Image (cartoon, rainbow, N blue to C red; front, side):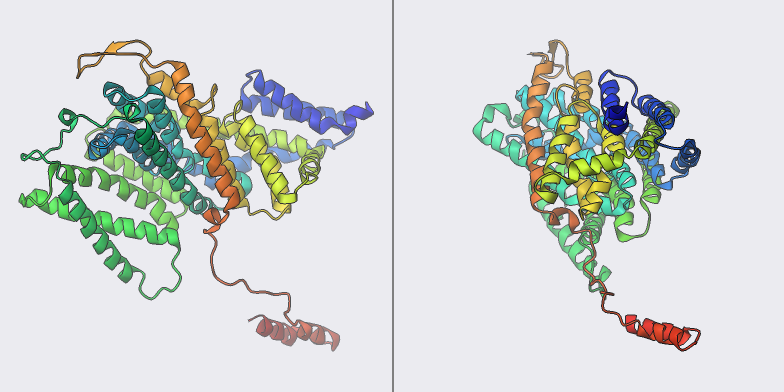
Length: 559
């Protein structure tokens, strides 16, 4: 009995891991173990029964948390966009744009994955859309199956690190930090990760040309009467839009000495998109012939998502809206885009709202269960056990961060993101805070690491989503009329391995270069209050005054 009393916290945590590995539902496992061990602790005299009186207030606090409203808003936005045909148009157009170079289709998948990530924030929507649209085309023209499936799964997981991401929302809530700061901190690592995927595709296409062939001439549909692709007019339009954006941004930022980098990027992209869209609209309305078919198509397909990105992320970064308000505007913008494309139907809306409700309830129930668990776990000093365990690691901060990164990577084999975020992060965050680690940087580090959980064989959800839409048997291609071999589960698993390595390299990069994340901090100087002379207040108290004059002296010294 003394052994059980002294080690009740590790026994409780080990019991939780066992039940999760056995496949019990996460939310109910957390709540049941929390209640069970809470009663055991009461019986052993470790905690008082009055502690459980705090539980109802904690549950009501979860339901009243405005931050979590962003989850249903961004989920609904992503589902509406996925069903409105935006992903299909983007993949077709960008695939045609890069189709004549080797690996062009795979590069298009990564670019569309990044753009879908900045507008949807939902992994399932991105992976399923690209699996249904791009995978048949890549198989049709001879792409290596491991490369094709790996790049689709990895590009879909960009939704977990590029804002607006449900992962970042949950992490910000669990760490007690601003969602806006978490979005700013994650932007650079997310874009670098997308760029790393493109670099890998280029390297594969250079050393193994047969694994990533270019589109044959007959598949390039946007061609001018003279047979050319019309890329020159697209290049001229891009340069024109960039110049206009630069000039307009100078007037936008006039008189401001300190402008955050993320605000500069968002405003310049908005100005460039407006300039390009106006030129394309004028060209089409007056039939001027300035732009080729390809340039016009790229402009009209790319601009609506860019406007939606500005509506969501731009308003957050500039400071016009909170993340919850940005999510609400994004959901409305997605509905408007669906109406404009004539894709919004009552069955589509009901399906999207039903899925959004299920996912939101799933998140809230897990959060309620984790609250019950953490109440009992902290009551028996489980947080102190974790703190002593991790703080005593050799190497100080670096030892802690390396062990946490390895632990998160290993746990991602068995647990999905929500389980990691609601079980592991609340135990690690207080230790990181006490060690002086910036929690935004720590959260982004965990987010990049947790991203691997979606492409981990054998339990990666992105792999499951792709398996559900990949061909399970040989079939006859509808265009070439040739027999195409099926995609095996082994090919999907092996295809994910290089991208897991890339993600781990990004984890190492975030560890080695914290400035990739901490650029979100203001550069304004921090007032040092350690040398402030507060003698005036003591003088007022000493000589029987009311201290008002002393307080004024202290205020003057502070200023």
